[in-house]
Structure formats: C-alpha cells, structure tokens
Length: 365
Image 1: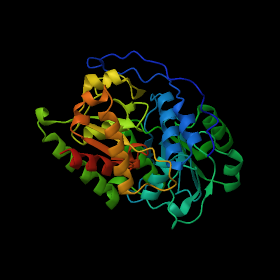
Image 2: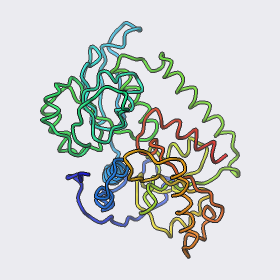
Image 3: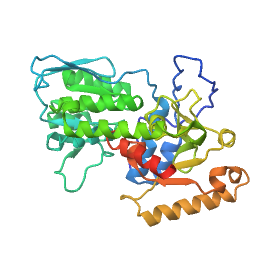
Image 4: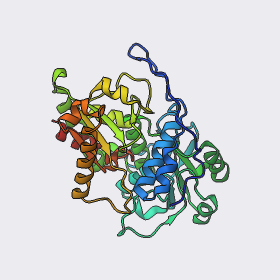
C-alpha cells in the first residue's frame, strides 16, 4: 500500500476549546496533522487507508469555503443548460451540455456521479473510489492528495471533479492546466453535501427537484426530520462518534457527520464544542459520558468484513474497555450500547449518507 506523500509526519497538537453557544460564527478547526495516517497506511488495506487519508485531510482542512452554487442561465424550464457553477473556491465555469469524459478525485464525488447515472461518462477515479466489479473498467489516477496529472491529461477529460481535501498546490496545478474544466467541492456540513449533490446532478443534466431520485431524497429527509423532532428533549440519547477504534478522532459542529447525528434525532456529545474534526481526550469522553458510542471499523481487508467478523471485533473491543480502569466507568460500555459499523456514509458524504442517518435513528430508538 502506498503512503500518501503529501501527508506530513507530525504529532497532533492539543487545542483549547470554548463554548460557542453565544457566538454567531464558530472558530473553525485549526490545521492539524496526524501520525495515524502513516501508521495505518503502512498497515495496508484499502478501507483502512481511505479512513486514514480522510481523517488526516479533514483534520488539516478548514471549512471556510462554500457549497457549489448553481445558476441557471437558460429560459427553457425543461432544459437545465446552460448553467454556471460557482465552486467552493469561488471559481466560475459555464456548461452548455453534460460533460462526456469525467475524472473524479474523491470517493464522495464518484458516488454522486454514480447515483445520478453518470457511470458511463467516468473515465478516471482515485484508488479510494468505490467502483463495483460489474461497472466498466476505468483508470485509477492516484489518490486525492497525489493525483497523477499526466494520467489525467491522457484521459482528455472535459470535467474534473475535485474536493478541498486535495492539497491547494495540487488544485492550483489542475486549475492552471485544465482551466474551465475543474469544479471543486467542499462538502461543508450536511446542507453543503446536499447542495454539492444538486450541482453534480445539474452537470449530468438532471434537475434535482424534478427528478424521482431527488424527490425521494427530499421526502425521506423530511420524514426523518419529523420523527426526530417528535422526540422529547428529555428522551433524546447522546452519542460519541469515533473514527476507528484507537486515537479518539471525532466530529463536531459544522461537519457533515455531526449533522447526520443530529438529523437522526440524537445529541452529538460534542455539539457545544468549537471544532469540526479533532482528536479528543479520554477525560472529555468521561465528562460527556455518552449513552451510545459509534465506532467506524478500520478493517484492513480488501473487502468489507462479514457481519460475524464485525461482531467479533465489537465484542473484543467492548471486553477490552470493560477491563480498562477508565473506560469501564462509561455508561455506553457498561450497557454495551456500542454501534460498530463499516458504513461508508460516515467518511464518504453523499446521497447514501441519508441512509446512514436513517439507520442510526432506528438502532438508537
């Protein structure tokens, strides 16, 4: 397994947190770098490597950028084109028809293209993008942090979809070489993910609100919000999301993962903190004492582990925590209210993440 060369080997700094309840704008996460990426990438495994890159890049990426904005320029209400997109970095591109050759530099964007039926237009993806065996072959052009620009050139794309998880220097190089063919997305919060998904749909010639898939997503989210809103505050459960079983990496306000937890009618224990993504201390976990703990499985297998294997890992982890003098004090450990999941909705924001929130609601309530 290759190690992402653009990730630096530095320890995570400690950060001072404050309560932002009376502040209209939250101070965004300071740029953090994490050694866990190197340790886990070296261990091998596609799923494990992607989790590591996701964490490392999220911890060092600030979310000052905005969701992609769509401007419909035509007069024909049945034809979405021409459209103008203002991407997350403020760059404008105009599209008069659906692009025919698409390169995706993020698993989330690949999932969005696939959701809207654009598989046949994809010619290049990253090594972390999910691409089913029954889908036609496409070229792997490297990772999010180290895409091979020469490989991208050979594919002759007319659209490159990228995210702000790709380093700025690389995005600048792509912008200079491919000019008006690059659109950058930030996936800032769940509302930002939804807007980005609408932009991808528009690029593929689909008007979100008028399409059946779009209508279904809107209906399902409304139904989930209604169910969650009906839960009395005193009956709401609290939850801590941990990315991987070691390291205490989690999400906070402003992140799409935090929004998914809240959408499910559950109070994220970090809801009063001022970070989007951070490494926390066990002392904080004890103070929050969540009703539930959700752990994303960082499996090293090339394929997702079986349900039985996931249960084995969950059971072993719970047992180890029950034997720990600190962890055994937590209600979630005592009551074994642990959710152990390999659901990619927590690391690959997109249409499938709505199912992630729906399933979380059903498990907890």
